[in-house]
Image 1 (cartoon, helix red, strand yellow):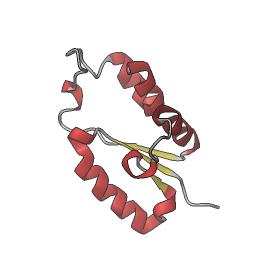
Image 2: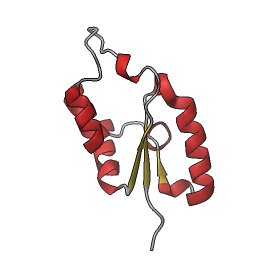
Image 3: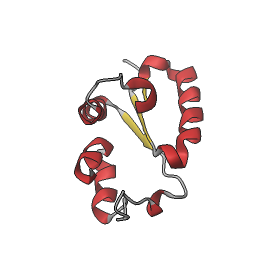
Image 4: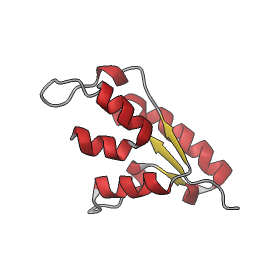
Length: 102
């Protein structure tokens, strides 16, 4: 049986450091090819949303890191970035959530 494919979801401004350390440790245990993190694994020119959708669909484990400012994030117009709609969406698919919220 293959090792699990692990997707790490996080907000860069809130938990990037924690995501990086978690990724480092998981790579030690499972191998670099088993861990997906967008900063490291989406090539320039790739469709961001489509790549995330594909990776979420293929992952066996999704780790969503929620930092202390997660609930207070706003979009460019100052609207809350975290709503009941996005919270439910995160539970199902962060990539789809990004597409809905964008």
